[in-house]
Length: 455
Image (cartoon, rainbow, N blue to C red; front, side, top):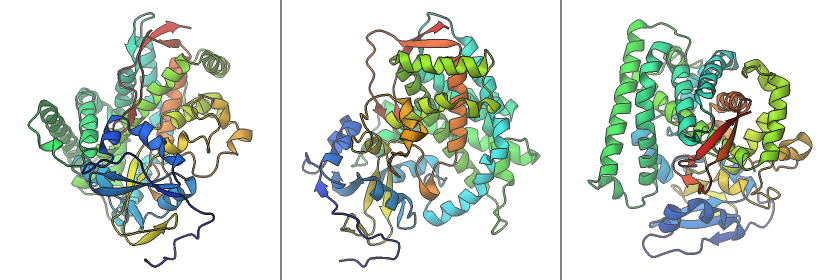
């Protein structure tokens, strides 16, 4: 038996522990995780508050109760980033905010945080406003668009222009849009392969992944070198990263660290927001009453104007719509932690290097935490109803010291994009389109054809 450490909380009730059903010899639950991970994981809270499953021969633990998830996320020293997803992501993202260990993450967070200071948001919002209007003007009534690809193109332009100065961003966007989907899909395939053999196969998918990753690294290196030569503050995120000083040590990020942060921000900033926006338009297209309420707010607040940063406080229903979309389809649907020492969780003794799976998707779809969890109900986030959501049940951006550093940036971008598009267009799904979540590094909708009509 291990020794209870000072950070641990005594049990408040009798925790239920269970082993996940359906384990197969040698591969464990790898088949369920590969074929239908969201459905499989969402079935596990019925078995226990903490559920053990196997990925190959490795044990992993899924906390299904929000109190357990909070215990993990608020104790970053003991439950550090780690596990199979991190180990597969590190060769791609380097040692950035997502993959760095606890001590290094604290230093990086201090250095990167100024780039997301609220004082910079109005300038970033101008980019969001401009690109959202460009996108909304480009559509043709009656001509179907793939809203997933369209939103990824939009968020790629926004993220690139926020990261890099205008002259560089224009050249970088096409390369980013080409490489990013290949990297994201390939990274998830490797992360979910318990054997590690898939990445070594000489197949076309692996060749495309390696080529895309090489091209993305080369692009970032060239941009960082260009910025270093001029040493000017161009008012963008990369300038903020290059000039940031650690308030405790006076140190700065070196070129490799800057490279890793840029790679992390590109992958996290583009893919997640694009997926969430695509799901939002899909949900609106299938819920005309919610769509009508959204349009009513936009007509009153904007009165034909393009949404801007100053409008956000008045776009209350728009924010609730996006908040509810994030509940149903959280882009960061699964991430992993690893224990750094012997500890106790839900009354179970966990040895060092135990893998923990944290799934916001599982929490968000648990009927014990959300009434009628499969319904799209933005009004569940009205103040009088939202107060009933238990602490730790809603985690689209994570929690604790590793909470998404770009959460306010992303919410601002999504609100402006949603308001700008929805004030001009109605979107309806192409008939007979089958839609299901496609869990990759984010929770993608896959191809999502929709038909726009002018309002």
